[in-house]
Image (tube, rainbow, N blue to C red):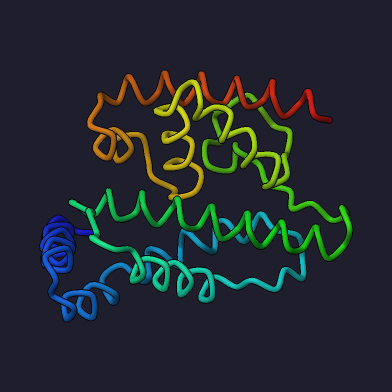
Length: 191
């Protein structure tokens, strides 16, 4: 997204936060394609025949965002971070329903390293196991959990994550490496 669009998105988010309902109507076309790209990336990791589509996932994110009282989004990056968290919740909810329908079978398999191809970890995990692991990680290192959410679920790069969290890129790189190592160990132990 070009820099003028980034500022326009941030301005619309601030207007929306201040109660301008029309700002959301102007915001949607600016962020829709990028959210669909992120959603398609998540859904590519789903098994063939997955019933949830990128458009439906993005629409569900918008529906949940509209229901958020007192929107506190302050920038484009923060908006995508919040959207990533919502996508995680939607995908986890969908996986739980699917697992419940199949009485424990058919876990959704995803790979953390599809986001960061240079990483050493190559095994896959199911989305429910990842969600449980992230909840545990959050209990003792919330920032590492946020880094994983932003990298994996929002598809943000290292500088964007650093901006969203207000830390240096070196901190994000370190936290990302540590979180991946911990998650790999945690999820491997489950297998």
